[in-house]
Structure formats: structure tokens, C-alpha cells
Length: 158
Image 1 (cartoon, helix red, strand yellow):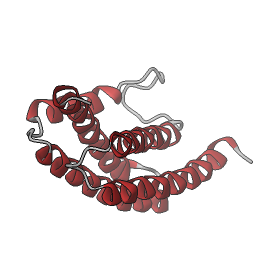
Image 2 (cartoon, rainbow, N blue to C red; image 1 turned 180 degrees about the vertical axis):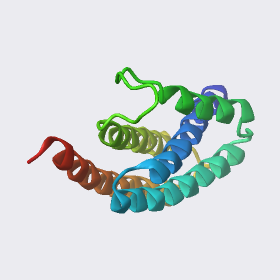
Image 3 (cartoon, rainbow, N blue to C red; image 1 turned 135 degrees about the horizontal axis):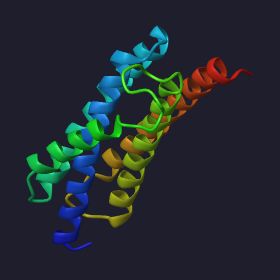
């Protein structure tokens, strides 16, 4: 990967991580199940830590994290709240479930980014650190899957 492409790729992930952190924080505040909200808040802390590692990687490659990308990512998270659920003021009962699914998608995207960076073999990136980030993402995905099933069973029944 040449540096121009790499930097653009990292900026896209920076924007996504900014949106992801905002989404995790919001779901951690608004989820109707207190235990799920608590688990999501813990995940939000981890996702924010992963975002800091991404910032360090961006700097190590000679770029700077884009404040425009971060702002765009957070704005995209806000726009993502607008959904065709027929409820303009109140939350839909499905919001809790769909938000957990969005969190799973965010972590899966983050994991894919770590995998590609590891496969690229750029000497400016620590492969052990990237492998650890992939393991962390796998653990986060497993916890989100359990939360997804818990919320889904409550809403849909099992």
C-alpha cells in the first residue's frame, strides 16, 4: 500500500472510529436494559482505547488524524439516529436491538481494518499490537453477540 492510499484508508477508519465511539457512548446511556447498558459502556471504553491506538498508528505512518474526518464520523452517527420506525419522538422497541447490531457492524469493520494493516506488513506498525487488536475485536464481537441474543430474545421471544 503506498502512503497516499494508506493515509486515506486510515482516515476512513478514523472517521468510522469517531462515529463508533459516539454510538457506543450513546447506546451505553440510552439502552433500556441496565445490564446491557453497563456492558456497552465497558465496551465504549475499550473502543475508545482502540481509537487511541489508531491515532498512534496514523501518526507513526507520518499522517495526522483528520479533525474533519472525526467530525464527519460523529455527524454520520447523529444522522444514523434518523430511522424509518414510525416514531419521531419516542424510541421504537426495536431500537435497542438494531443499535446492538450497529455496534457489531462497527466492531467488525474495525477488525477488518486491523487485519488488513497486519497483512500489509508495514514496518511502521507493530504486528504483535495489531494481532492483539484483532483478538480484542474478536472478544468484543463475542460479547456483543451475547448482548444481541439477550436483547433479541427479550423483544422477539425465544
